[in-house]
Image (tube, rainbow, N blue to C red):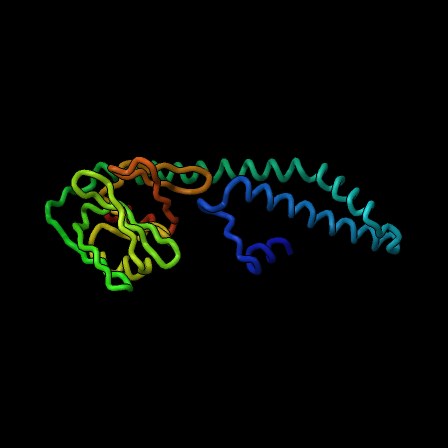
Length: 219
């Protein structure tokens, strides 16, 4: 029942960069309380509902927590270690392809058009990444030897289509990345992260479904 409520009713994403340790701890606490409620109702059912009361419910939470904290903590640690190992293996696999990144001297210019008529024209090879935030996208690119950004009122879907057949592709539902600018790939329990050339203060997340496309362009 807990899985049905969290995954299908509340539609919580229990993976990826947004799934932090704090959220996992909070979910585990809710799970323990949920189990305690089930124990409380079951005990009352066996005793003809003579154990109903606030004190008995609090005591049941205490008993359930003492018993359940060890398997919950152990399973959480194992899940985190397994996810970290898996993502690290994928990161190493992608890193092997970085040495084969092609050097293409052809300059491809794109015109990114916003909903309000604003237009940003730039060399696709100078783009580092694009981040979506609600009804806006932020384009990070090189200009005059430095990293600059431009905010456009547009959608990620429209911006992606305007890059066409360039090396700037979707790597996450909220990010586009210039595959040719990937400098390092790392993995942890939350997923994969991309370190980009000329970008020192940010790393770009990668969703699992976009990994094959990145490998294809790096080959």
